[in-house]
Length: 127
Image 1: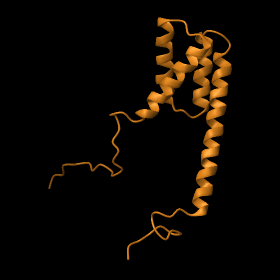
Image 2: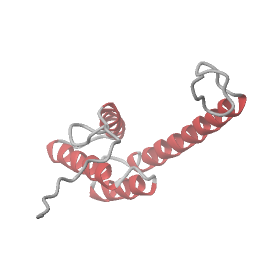
Image 3: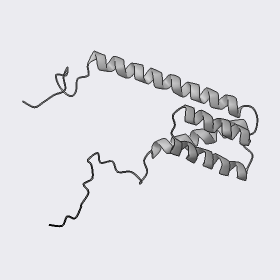
Image 4: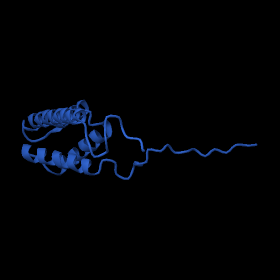
């Protein structure tokens, strides 16, 4: 008989506790997402984006735990877009959404290994 996680008869069954926990997690993430989008809309809705709005967006992304690298990428992309053209509120929101979608589609890129096995260091020893 092979080992199975506690509380499961087989891998195809999910316990009521797990379903409840996943439902609460999904609800919490949805609430966070709506809050972030609403705050972004309030910043962007003040008119065409300017440097003050970009600074507020940067602060909001960091407070939302988007991460430093992701926030830097979003802000740099947004500033580059602003150098090309003025962004009215709806276009700014659409551009931010697209940036976030693109990041989620390729969250790790080629810079990370998906292996969870620690890499062994090869050391030379003198005998």
